[in-house]
Length: 254
Image 1: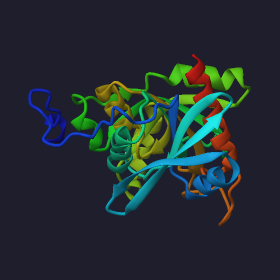
Image 2: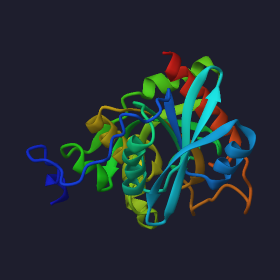
Image 3: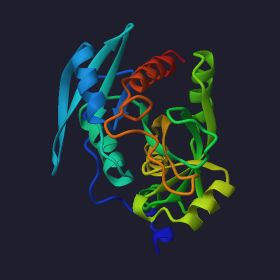
Image 4: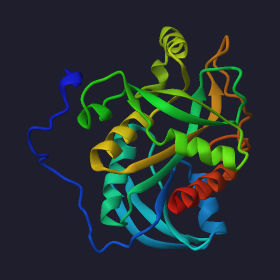
C-alpha cells in the first residue's frame, strides 16, 4: 500500500548528485510560469550559472544579484514528482538550504478574492510523492508558514492563512472531496506542497511557500475567474515574483 511506502531502514538505490563546489546562494526561487521566467530574465540582472536535464529538456538555473544578496532562480514543473525532482537535481548546480516556491492554486472559499496571497499552514497528502519521504499521515505541517506570514504582515501584503489540499489529479477534484476538504479547513488546492514539504523535511531544507488565489471551486460551477489571456492576479502576474524576491531577501537576512 502507498501508506507503507516510506522506508528508512535501507539505502536509496539512486541519490541526487551533490556538488560541493557549486556556487553558494542565499536562497533559490522557483516559479511554475514561463511568462514569469521570461519577465525575470528580461528585467533583472540574470546570469545563467548552470543547467540540469529532464527528458523534456534542459532547465536553466539563473543567478540574480539583488540588494547585496545572491539568489538562484529557475522554472520548475507542475506536479509533486517533477517539482520535487528539480529541487533535488538543483543540488548539483547550487548550494543552499532555502527554497522559495510560489504559484497559482485553486481556491476553496468564495470569500477569498482572486489574486489574493494564500499562505499554507498544513498540506493534505492526497498525492504519492510525500509517502516516499515521511511516514503516512493525513497532513504534513508547513513549518515556515509563520515566517512567511510575518513577512507578509511586515510588508503590508494582504494574505490569508489556512490548510491546503495537495492532489495529483485536478480532473478528479470531485464535489464530495471539495466539500470534505473545505469543511476540514482547506482554503486551496494545488499539486506540490505536500511533496515539497515532506522532501524538504527529509533532506534538511527550508521551504517558504505561498499561493496566488486563482480559479474558484466554491461556486455552482467551476469558475476560472479570469478572461482568456488575462495575467493580472494570476500565477503569471510578475508582481508575485516581486513578492517572492523580497521574501527571499527577508529569509536571507533572518
